[in-house]
Length: 132
Image (cartoon, rainbow, N blue to C red):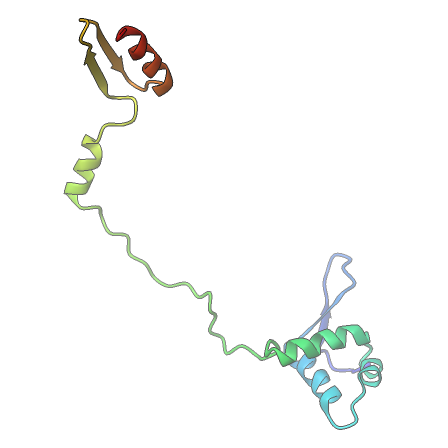
């Protein structure tokens, strides 16, 4: 096994080793050298050959590169602007669902007043009955 401290063991009973990107890259590059055998390199570094094949795939995809310190998920400053007064006033004036009133006078003299939310199907049936 490589004597360099290129891996750590997690605390709390987790026996898995955590390898640095640089270590993974160096081990993979050993397998890519002329005559490099995955199984021989894996035994030399006390790593399972299947793990090494996964690292080779990541290497080919460019995912074993060291980061430069800038992250794609970096936070950016924001500024929350106050809502324009006209838009805020309009929102206050807009009726909420259920606040309205509807008055219908039918030709037979019947008058129907609906306040708040109404069931459309029930209202339709009532109007059909009253308009007969």
